[in-house]
View 1: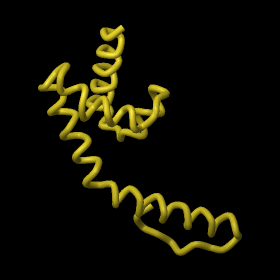
View 2: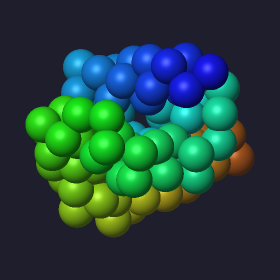
View 3: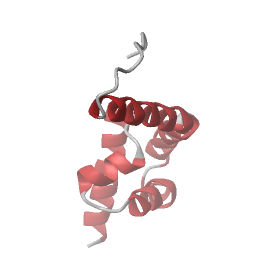
View 4: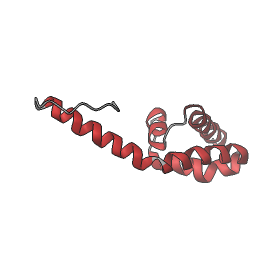
Length: 96
């Protein structure tokens, strides 16, 4: 049974490295909670493969450092789409 969990943890770690995805994105792909993914990547992976753990940790650290940017961008898109739905003409944005 433990081999099954170890293999799934390694699959998740490889997926995170390949796609550089966030914990939430990984959780939705594998159909488990984000807390479980975070626990697997920050605690259990260390005991399975320390080198892989260090690589995944760097990706998760980067995702944490740009989290505020992702949140701001999604909020901007939300309000931009609401203006279009309400019939208002949104200001032209060169960054979109």
